[in-house]
Length: 230
Image (cartoon, rainbow, N blue to C red; front, side, top):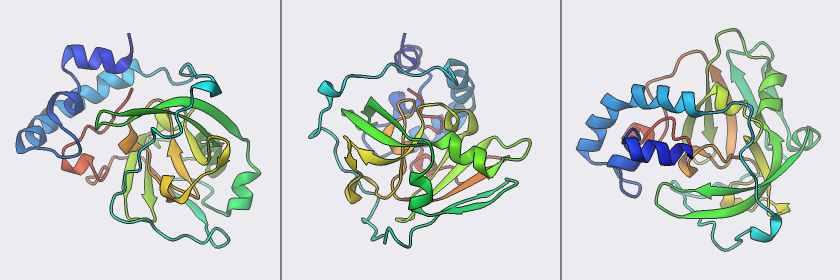
């Protein structure tokens, strides 16, 4: 049984049970606060940290199905000046140019991108596994969470285990081509183990933490489920 099928049948997912579209009611906010710690523990148990999600053939890519959702505006980023900052509770803080990122191990995968709004698309993502970047920065003992900041001021946070999953990418390709700006270029999160709102676009900073901060993510702070696993 898929993770989301289990959560739906048991009523453990506050996202599936209480939320509609990208808005949250007061009831959802209160109930989500009460159920979230329990949901997170259940979803952590269901996650298989090093087991790849079955991938799909290139022939099944749906190039027109990936909708473009924007938080507010599409930022203008000069690729030549772009730097990805990796900091926080790490032994080796980094600032990487795109050329340096392109030299790191590359992975491509065809997966289903699932949005909480109810649509899905089969997409080929290509980029560097996030765990390669995290390992370069050498997290300190006790590091459990990772925060992502984007050029459009969107923010997100993930559990470290999901970040280290082999199919969690910092993607710079879509369907075998350079990632379009509307889809998050020059660098975005892409993974088959999280809902779409967890997959930040235009990422400029990755910050490692030992504690989950009060501001957990843009949509989570409005009542959405934090773990958001699939």
